[in-house]
Length: 480
Ligand code: FAD
Ligand code: SF4
Ligand code: SF4
Image (cartoon, rainbow, N blue to C red):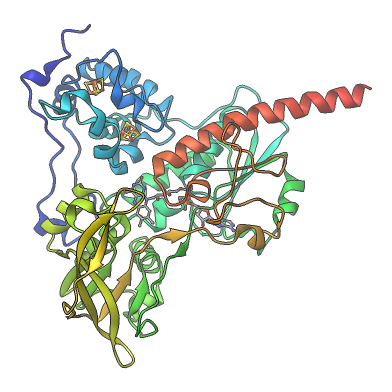
């Protein structure tokens, strides 16, 4: 093993510098800086090069982490990039927004006695350097194939599948109802976690690789699934989940109560330079307002931190469980607290107050009772603990469900689960319709970017086998 490794005993863990909260509150730029080269090399050298690397096992794309850490520690960055990009289509994106504490870094074996290796930050450093040095190049397939694949959805799942299929030489057409490429990476996730240029340069690279994008093109409105099947030899459905979960409470119909994704999309569009009337007229803008966000997941964290940056007077996050039991990443809670967000733990909304527009939320305190069948303690109301929290903007961040895809796509025969997610054969990613594959959130339910990438890669491999088989069968049929 290289003498440069195993430095965790003497070298402390360091993350790239995090900007001061006061400066973060004023813009939508990412909050972490980049490692200096020396610091990246040093941090990579903390890895103990485990024989069984648990970091890799718990990375959804099975990144060869020990190898690229060792190459980085030895200053062999171009090779580190080659290894890193061989398993992950968008390593710099995962390095920024994977919840590493729950995935690779959470499983790093040196975490117990010493702090884990900063895997995500090194991954981001390697690929950002590769972009800077011009090592990231468009795909040039060895041979162009006649067969074409239609991908519905330009989120991370669809884009990873498109990239892999282009590498094999297929003609790839990506359809999206939005006007930009990226799915939730462009319109959901705020810039302070993932700057938009990082997504845009990937979209440009894919276009330069020969992927054809059909934007403002909605399956169900501009074409049915059947029409698309006739055009292409295989189809990938990667449409994500967009139906916001709602709560029905007294006062739910008042003005000033908005779904999280509408709010975040307006903010992202504004940041991208679009004209957004709902932002300008204040409907989807927290400037000068007292804001209450309901929910405890990562979307809620993105809303509270966006509201702070828009100049809200106060921002409170109402969550019915406690800090320990919230679904959102604790790293994001800490970031939000530093930026001035107040968390109202163990509180649930009972009603929205106001005449025409919301003026407050009536909340009730909760305590955690006995665990249910999933092992989670059930929140129980505390009698007589109702209290009012004044606000003029209430944002509902309660999660997402699948839309009714079979109806929308005019394909009643497409099988879905009881939650509306598309059912697939997990060995092949194929749905019950021949040549129609599905990936990402529309299969898993709301999940993570890195899982969508993994699904896109798996589906591309299956499609390659499927299309090779189809071509061979066609040749036999022609010859007989
Ligand atoms: P999506 O990214 O949702 O893309 C689906 C695409 O399909 C969209 O572009 C949509 O316009 C298009 N589409 C839908 N229907 C049609 C149709 N009928 N015709 C044509 N096009 C259609 N994950 C992380 O890993 N880290 C994070 O920090 C993180 N933060 C998040 C913050 C927010 C606010 C949200 C909402 C999610 C976050 N996620 C995060 C989750 C992550 O964004 C998703 O898991 C991931 O984007 C799913 O990828 P996908 O390709 O399946 O779908
Ligand atoms: Fe960790 Fe995500 Fe990178 Fe895998 S892709 S190594 S989980 S940051
Ligand atoms: Fe290195 Fe930690 Fe992975 Fe072991 S688990 S190979 S120490 S990063």
